[in-house]
Length: 327
Image 1 (spheres, rainbow, N blue to C red):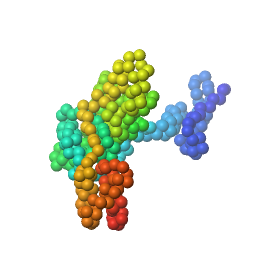
Image 2: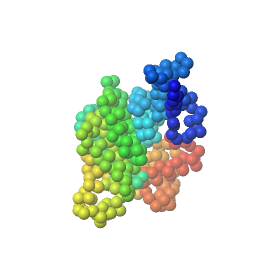
Image 3: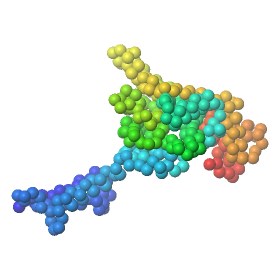
Image 4: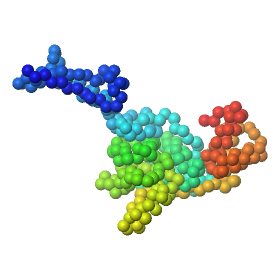
């Protein structure tokens, strides 16, 4: 009789896996009637052990998620699972100053989506630190607060996908398709450089694919660039393509997949100080108004910009000097 050996060959850290009980060595004896396993181990049991070991190596089953566990999740592309976020890092929408028009537009679009009617994907682009991602998270909280007043409404779920995982967007949409909840997928600081071709996956996922975007999914992205592609990337296409105009149009057509383009621009000094005073009043930071303004302007001058982020950083510094926490 000929003896054969079946071995599960793991990949990755060999030392760590060597102590894994899931990895077993199975001996079998080949006979004329088929494989025969030693002792009282049947073929079925041995195959079950092999399947269990492979499943453990591969990680959790893709797509399994308890959507009632939280209202916000992060997409883990490696295992195609959603990780609940118990507490979202955000500020109240009333504290976001100087962006009233885009705030109202995004809030109305999101509310329509939450109510089950037509809504557009949105691209929030423009000046850094002006509250693009903060607005998306604040709008999500505001809509859920309104939905909570209706006992028959389900909360809107916020799902963040990281920029480096954007090629997994079609897989994420497949996981969410057909679920009873409505999902707002959010990607922060979305941009593409050099030979990066992952933007093509995004184009197909948003529009153009056979399935199309699931009706219970909306996609919001933030970027410092209006077309999400670097000027160098576009100019290279213009200079090397046989038909430069067609090449450039193919590159910038990604932004056309977003029905809403919401621009954020550098704020004025008055708007900047309004942000600072709004934060100071909200967190009850006792300091003379004139002194706060003087310090806030010096803080902005030292950093070379006036923005919501700069205002927030000054408030954190002020709160720390006053011995207070800001949460």
